[in-house]
Length: 157
Image (cartoon, rainbow, N blue to C red):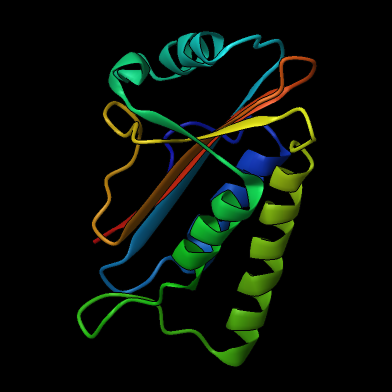
């Protein structure tokens, strides 16, 4: 999990997800940065660099995507349960609780998406508090007229 305390409600949900998804040789982590006044992708990259000094957001690739593709990738990561050597083994009650938290997390992300949003899928991982073996996602939701969001998640062994 992240070394810092949760910074906002979405980040707190990410922490909750990481606890609920922790399994045998399977450790997920999530992070969220809310950015109050980003007019461009460069503004977002500067804020990422401020929050994670060792990151190199300027060296990463960014590809414009849409909310459906973003949510599908996040859901695919959420649905991964591992293999024989690593992964999640949940009771039906734990699975139900996890699905509810995942739905809350996705709902909070969707609150940031509007018709004017520009969504980028990014390859950034260096310098972030993550290491991935099983899955990884990172997205920027740029809202030049409102609050933007950088979110990431990964699972490792």
